Image (cartoon, rainbow, N blue to C red; front, side, top):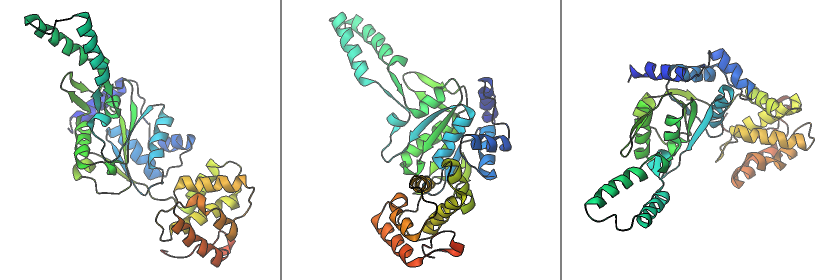
Amino acid sequence: MAERQPEVKQGAEDQGRAGLGSPELVLRGLRSVGYLPNERIASVVYLGERLAKPVLVEGPAGTGKTELAKSVAAMSNMRLIRLQCYEGLDEAKALYEWNYKKQLLRIQAEQVSRPGSSSGPDGATSWSELESDIFSEEFLLARPLLAAIRAPDPVVLLIDEVDRLEVETEALLLEVLSDYQVSIPELGTIVSTQTPLVFLTSNNSRELSEALKRRCLYLYIDYPSVEREQEIVRSRVPGIGEHLAAQVSGLVRSLRDMDLKKRPSVSETIDLAHTLFLMGAEEITPQLAADTLHVLLKYQSDIEKAAAELTAGGSGPSGSYPRVGTAGR
C-alpha cells in the first residue's frame, strides 16, 4: 500500500488537478469561500491532498466538519460527492446496485421479440447473450463510493457521519479506501484513475475501528473560541455591529458551558445573529436573549434551564453579554 499511493497521486495530477499548493494557500482559499479555518485545519487539508490520504474529521455536532468538505470542493472547483451515513446503510446504497426494473423490462422485451428462444440448445446461447447484456454499464446504478472512483476528474468525496454506520459497512469503506478500486463480479475490477480527496466526519457517537483510523489523517474540530466565532458571525451576517456580534458569540459560549442536552452549533449562532440583525437589535438584554432562545436551543428543558439563568442573572462581565450561569466553567 505504501508504495502504491505515489502512483495514484501521479495519476490524479495527470488528470489535471493543480493541487492545493501550500497550507497558506489552503487557508486563503477556504476564507475566500466563507470558511474561516485555523492553521491546523489548513495544514491537515493540505497534507490530505498531497499524501492522497482520507481525512477523518471528528468533533461535536455543528462545528463545521461537513462545511469544511464542501468549502474545499468550492475553493478547488472540484465536484462534491456525498455519502450520508445512517444505520442500515448497505452496499447497494453506498457502492452500486443493478437497475432490476430495467433489467426485467429488457428480458421481457427479448422474450416478446424472440418467442421460444429460451428452450433448446440455442436457448442457452441466447440466455448467455442476454445475461451479458443486462449486466452491462447500461444497467449499473453507481452510488457515491463507485461514482467517486469512476469520476474522470478529481472529486471531493464526503462520507458524512461515518460513526452511524454498522461495523460491517465500515469494513466496506476500508476495502474501497485502501486501494480505491471496486470489484463488480459481472464487470470485473474498476480501478480509480484519480485519487478522490476524501473527508470522513464523525460526531463521536461510537468508537471507530483502529483499521479505519490508521488509513486516515486525523483532525479534531471543536467549538470555536469566542473571538473566532465572532469573526464567523461578522463574515456570515454582513452589516451586524461589532458589539452585537461579540454579545452573540459570548452568549452562545455561555450556553455551551451549561449542562444541556444539545449545545448550540455554529450554524445556530449564525441563525441567532441573523434574527437579531433583522429585528434591529443593537444590544442583547437578558429578556431579549430569553425570548430568542428557541433559535439556539431545540429542547424545551434546555430552553427553560437557560431562561431561568438569564432572567435571574442580569448582565455579564463588563456588560459584554448576558450571564447564563457558570456551570461547567
